[in-house]
Structure formats: C-alpha cells, structure tokens
Image (cartoon, rainbow, N blue to C red):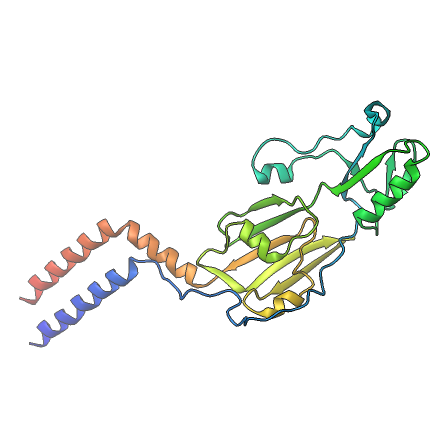
Length: 262
C-alpha cells in the first residue's frame, strides 16, 4: 500500500512539473503611468537644445538666384536603407569643431556651440546680408539620433527629424515595451562634452516628467532591462520545444516504475 501511494505521489509530481515547465512564465500587465489622474500640468522643463562640439549641422542657404549660393549646396543628407542604417551612416554637413565653430563660404568661421539652431540661423542670416540680401537660411541637426536597446519591440538607432523627442515617444517609436520589460528602471546613457552620464527613470511614475532625461538629446542611448521573469520564461520555452522528447521519457519512466512496484 505504501509503495502504491508513493508511486501516485511521484507520478503526480512528474505530471505537474512537466505541464508547468512547458509554458512561458507570464507576469501581470503593467500599466504605464497608472496613477495619473485627469488634470492639467504645466510643461516647464522642455529644454532649448543647444549645439555642442562634434554636432553635424545642415546649413542650407537659398536665394532668388540659386547660382549665387551654390557654394552652400554641397551637403547630401543620408543614404538609403533602414532607419538604423541611415542613423549610423555618414551624413555630410558642417561639423562643429573642438573650438565650437563652423566654417562657411563667404563669411568664414561662426561660433555655433552653445547656441540654438534658431540663434545660429539668425547670426548666419545677418552676416550673409552683405553678400546675398535676399538669402534665407535653414539650420537643423543631422546627427540627432537616439538608440533604443533591450526590451523594446524594435531595438534600433533612429533618426529624429525634429529637435525635440521625449523618452515615451522614443519607446513608442521602437514599438513599445516587450512583455518582459522592466518599466520602472529604464536607463538613459548620455555623452556630451566629453562626459558620460547614466540616469535611471521610472516610466510608471509621474516623476518621469521632471527627469533631466525625459527629453532626449542627440546620441542618447535608452536601455530597457529585462525582468527576471524572462529568464524563467526562456527556460520554459526551451522545455516546450523539447516536450515531444520529454513526455515519452516521462511515460516510459512511469511504466517502468509501475512494473517495479508490482
């Protein structure tokens, strides 16, 4: 009797272990900003993006007489390919050198570092009046890319067409979090002025909006860590793949054990 009871216990344990091991481990769905109530909040930390050394700028000058400004039409933007390939590819433009200057036809060096693109555009326009009274100037970043890695649906390097992008927009651009993303500890890595900074943010808390990295800057890297549940889920997926072999072995072991009890 004791042997039969022991056999039943062993068989039950093997069956439960086999069934529970073959499925991926899931965790409850986490809602981003779940504590947010209906209200209006002032936006007081949207930064004015400043030009830094090593930035690449597109500076386009146009005129009623295009032939007079051909010296400024030497830039070619981007290359064909995916967003990641374009983001990491070379883009011709005006590089801000170590002293913070760019060098332009006709007017020579212009201090760019520390200015916004609007301020630089106004300065270039003022200096060009003597040469092209009807010239119009457009300035924008060519190297504004952000990289998202880790637990997002489409990890990649993305080119940003405008001058403002927050971390939530970037995550949405990458297809949102995966089910195994650790949403309360997202790391932003930032390199500016020869310094590297690491900042963690909780995307499930309203304090995110006050973070200095809520608005991303050129060349930021956003890393989304995986939950520990992913490790167990991966193990479960492994067993699922090999269940056609695992179950026959369990059945055989059960049969042999049953014969030995008899």
